[in-house]
Length: 90
Image (cartoon, rainbow, N blue to C red):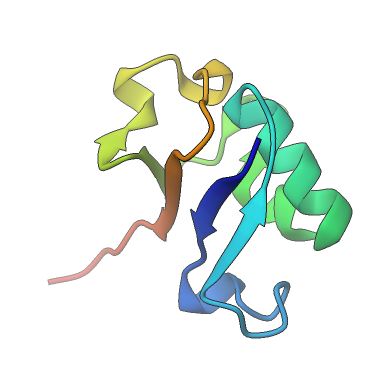
C-alpha cells in the first residue's frame, strides 16, 4: 500500500531533503513506524509516548487526524499524509 507523506522543511534532514516520500501502513501508527524504518529518527520527532506530539499537526487528505482517530486513524492506498509543525507567534 503506497501512501505519500509530505515532509515539512524542518524534518527534511531525515529524508535527505525530500519534500515527499512514500511509506506504507494500515494505520497512521504503522505508517510512522514504516517511515522511521526508512528514515531513522523521524518517528521521535512526530510522536511521543502519549501519541502525536502536541506541536505537530498531521493531515490525512486535508483532514486533521486529531478529529479522526488520531494515531490510530485508518489509511488506504493512495492517501496523502501531510506533516506540519505548529507555528506560534504573532
